[in-house]
Image (cartoon, rainbow, N blue to C red; front, side, top):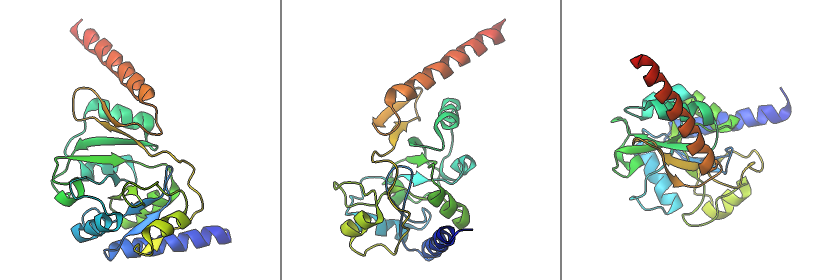
Amino acid sequence: MSTFDVGLASQIDKAVKVLKEGGIVAYPTDTVYGLGADIFNADAVAKVYEVKRRSRTLPLPVLIGEAEQVKLVTSSVSRYARHLMEHFWPGGLTLVLPKAASIPDIVTAGNDKVAVRLPDHIVPLTIICELGKPIIGTSANVSNKPSPLTAQEVEQQLAGQVDLIVDMGRCPGSVESTVVDVTGETPAVLRRGIVPEEEILEVFREYAKEVGKSENRSRL
């Protein structure tokens, strides 16, 4: 293992310790730097709202470390939602799903839905794996200010209010994830982002076509 790898591993170990103790951590992702907390620790989640100066009426997105962890955060997943997961995860697609009862209401601002993403970046995936729980996946910025692409930009905005910043250089993407509500019969794009809306809808249309063919064959 190289010196860089050892250094990164040390940062990740510290991040997991901070999260277990109820702290908040900024970390790089495949889009922008994120601000994380244990989603099941309501006090830690409250710190995220405070640091970001974010309204408690706005829900926070959640990151998982593997597709199977979606069971920890949602009460049900439709067939077409799973199809989108298989096509776009890990990556820049956030899916809005029915919320699991175990998630504190502060995470979802009292709503019965939760926004979930499986990122394509070693740092959050490793943190979540070692923590054993999903984490908050909001951008590490003050609300309505630019999303940070470097650890230095996080520090400039959040001014030492974060317990730890995992520095892995510049994030590869300057555009945040695309957010799609998949709780209805068809996907609804709530925020345009790094995954093109047209590509998502095309994948859904292909899925619907295959389902239709399957249903027709079953009637024969």
